[in-house]
Length: 307
Image (cartoon, rainbow, N blue to C red; front, side, top):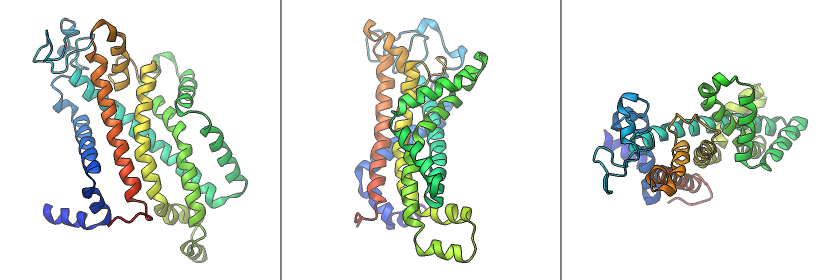
């Protein structure tokens, strides 16, 4: 059964292109392992960094197991609180991936909705949407995320900051990434709305909403999926940057950004592993997503000959 399923996938153009590309196979394998470890962090990680019973300050600043003074109980050493670095990285990647996926999904839904409706409806509505898009594109995403994050937190009571921090972060990153989806979806909609199947849909009396999101949207998904894949890596890096700056997730939450932030304070005192391993993990994660996105861009491009 598995062999037949594999053959069916391999016989498709996308499947053939995927298995032919070593970079795509390697990057997707790495990404799959990271996702699997993040989802089943409670099973994979030897310790739970959120459980005070498994954390001891006596184990703080333990170097990696292969270094002098290291312990076999902590492969990558421990941080300033005595938490196992391997476990905190796994749990931290879960936080970063949740924020990354949720923010890109939010940006994609908002951007595609505005882009498709602007391209199809046109007129003053299109002008307003695209001018707002152009203005926001002139502002770097990280600055927009900082601005939105600061404004959103000003409306939340101090006692709710830690509880709402992740949701505010998702909103801040998502609202800074939607213009790319809006521009691409609007340009693709302008091409698609003049085709015969759209005219036929109008003739038989289908509503504009149905035409836009049932007939046009499925035909413009290819470039949007590529942008979403590459945008996922950027969203994860943005989350890590905001957490590194102290405006992301709470300090008690072990995301990749907070781990790098706290480790940076001890970098010059000799405890290099606290910031080194989370930083390397973040680079590998972002690089594997970007390489997979590059493959998708080429594989989903109809102008490139796959076989």
